[in-house]
Amino acid sequence: MSELKKRLSSILESPKHNTEEKLQKVCHLLDQEVAYFNWTGFYFKNGEKDELILGPYVGAETDHTIIPYGKGICGQVAVSNETFVVPDVNQESNYLSCSIDTKAEIVVPIFKNGQNVGQIDIDSHTIDPFTDEDRELLEWLCNEVSKIL
Image (cartoon, rainbow, N blue to C red; front, top):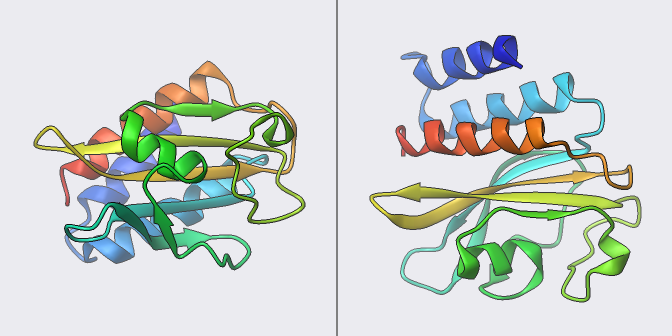
């Protein structure tokens, strides 16, 4: 994981790319390096509205380009301000299905100046794949991402 953190840091610190390009590169790297990350993307608060708007991502196209606060796992994290790990999406009543292949999801909030400004959302085609190490990595990553927003 420390090697992956170094590579993620070098992307985020690169002076050659704008924020959107950096986030796209982060999605690609995570997608390539973690076999069970099957959809990796960012959602951000949509201006002053209580909704999220899709940012850079890697994976199948999604109809969920706007998510109201409270709807689905991403919408819940926008309200709860806490990481949400869903080992089996079929057990979650508030799950918004993006793909029939998705079996599990992890969503980690991004804070800037104490405000929840967005999140990273990762879907997996495997039931219960996410480890404590994944959670720690993604929480670290979201903290690092907040520094470039």
